[in-house]
Length: 123
Image (cartoon, rainbow, N blue to C red; front, top):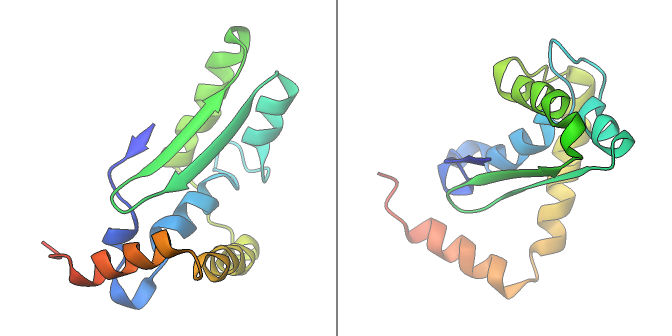
C-alpha cells in the first residue's frame, strides 16, 4: 500500500517525521496492542513485510500465504485506524530513525535528496 506522504512533507522542526511514523505503525494498535504482532503473524504464516519512506510516499509491502491473507489485512488495517504510538516505543524509534539517517549521510543519493528537498516548493 502506498501512502502519499513522504519526507518532503516533514515540517522543518520535525525532520524524519514520515519515517518515524512508518516505524511506529508496526508497533501495535488498539485492537492488536502487542508490539510487532503483525510481523509475528506474518512469520508464523510463511510471510514477511517491509516498508520504506521516499520523498513523497511511504510504501508498505507484505506477503503471506493466501489462507492467512484476511488475518494479515485485519492487523494491517489497524495500523491506520487506531495506532498506539506507545510512549515506551517513541524514544527507541526516534533513535532508530536517527541511526538510519546518520548511516545514510555519506551516501551521495541521500545528499542529492536533501538538496532537492531544500530547494523544492513547499506548496
